[in-house]
Image 1: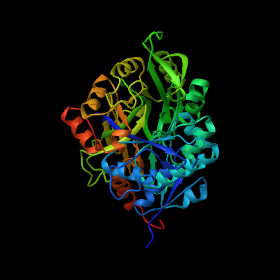
Image 2: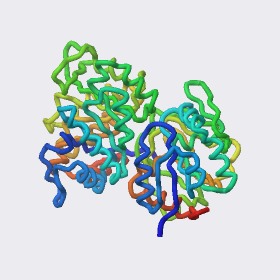
Image 3: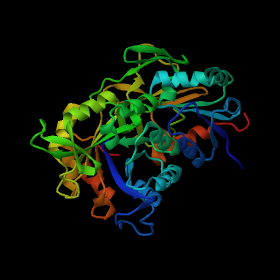
Length: 253
Length: 210
């Protein structure tokens, strides 16, 4: 037997609350990330991601509290990303109970942050999250953006993920900005390109809308598939995704 | 009635809270501490560990833990190593071609796995040792959460221990049970309900006030 493909729900957390509409379960406070984390765990999620979109730094304390309370009640791996700027931020999240921390904009601004975090805590907890977009001027056809796609960088997608791996990232999340929110399916081309470029696990993110989309991402080379809205809005249930992957002869938990 | 006391040894950074909570969940009176006296005294000691082998060994030495761990085992008092906390129990670990001495309690070397994708990250099955108490009653199809690039691989000489294995590119040691010494390469504290069952098996074997 070998390692199973992971299915990962992602929750946007703003000042300690989930703001995107969530209506997939009864009897759950849909605004409470801890209650949702428990519900996803019970449904068979293989990992969880909290993406912190808290704007004001004073409200960021609530994030640590959410992580702390989640770690008390949920016994599957938890990744936290969004606004992580320094090694000390990483340390605080790990100490609060996160297993992995994802770095995005801050890593582009100062790539050494990946190396510093990996040296201190190990590559296994350093996730490089990349917002990528199709671009005719990028050699691979994909450029790297930051600030949620609002800013373009000089980096070609493949150069950046290779550099990230070299610096110590233990996993790469490929967020396809063109596919994000469309529910038209993952961007299979960027997944396959990144899979061929690095030796660390690759997580597909952005575009999941129907059951076949998940299996397609795995066939393109994804080790894990991440989705947000299809789970939050109850369009798809975790168990359905797992069953569909199993029927497609893909190993799942 | 209170459960057995368990110390999760804090000798650096990383997520220790999950181990503490998971142990409490199965009835242990668990605390995270770097207090060596408490670690010496408790019914069961958990040695966690993430990151690099050399860094973990250094961290253990900095708090004076190796002697305490050896003393506990010599007295037959249970120790559970998790992930790199398991790897450092072996003779040595090699990273980037540089070997680091481990505690030498188990005769194997820890090296980088030969696999296409590393770290080995995610849920995998384990082939339990025949005489495993740790996996007693656990569904053989169950999956546990792994996250590591290095592991001890089965060698020429058999280990004088119950050795459970898993596969990622090659077969490696997923768990070891040898008298008071138990260790897992995977993270039972992150392995959901199945992980809790396994920890419950370990906690059941602890004697209160031993």
